[in-house]
Amino acid sequence: MTPQDVAAVAAQLGRRPRGLRRVAHRCPCGLPDVVETAPRLEDGTPFPTLYYATCPRLTSRIGTLEADGLMREQTERLATDPDLAAGYARAHEAYLADRDAIEPLGTATSAGGMPERVKCLHVHVAHTLARGAGVNPIGDETLERLAERDPWWHAGPCVEVGPTG
Image 1: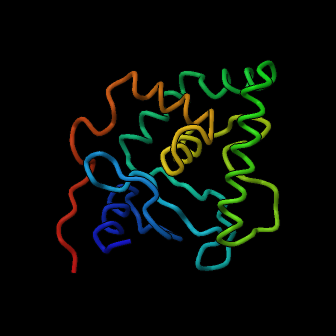
Image 2: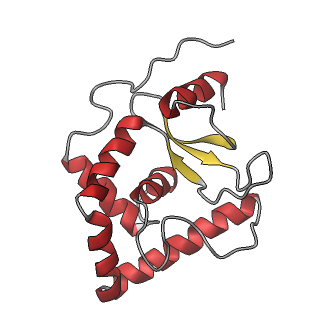
Image 3: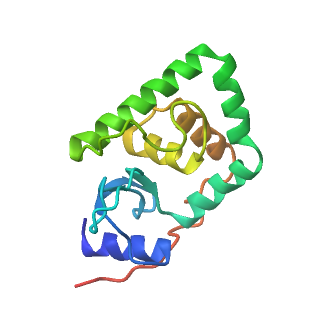
């Protein structure tokens, strides 16, 4: 990550970012909107959220979908749609494989409620943006719903970051 990327993420989060490894996805405006974090923070604390959405506009829009009940709807569908449940289980395994390739945490717990329920749409959208469509069906679906609304990047960069050095 460049110093400008780190500064942008700090401005997006409103705090010093922890455990940054790399930019996992860039917004069309050019700034990071998803970062990859270390499985353990500098102090050794496990941090299972490997892909972390940082853009405040993106996270706000995801929060609106959460408040509208999308997580509950998706969790209910997991119980009745075997194809969705199987795809979600594969997303869980892919997430664990990505994280464990960096540093195994010795747990089968991934993030966002996988594979039994949908707990955090931010995790799933970040996973989809980082890895691309087809890996996480919950992230794919949520990103499609976000695209139906005004995309987060239309207003331009979410933060201003000058040159660093």
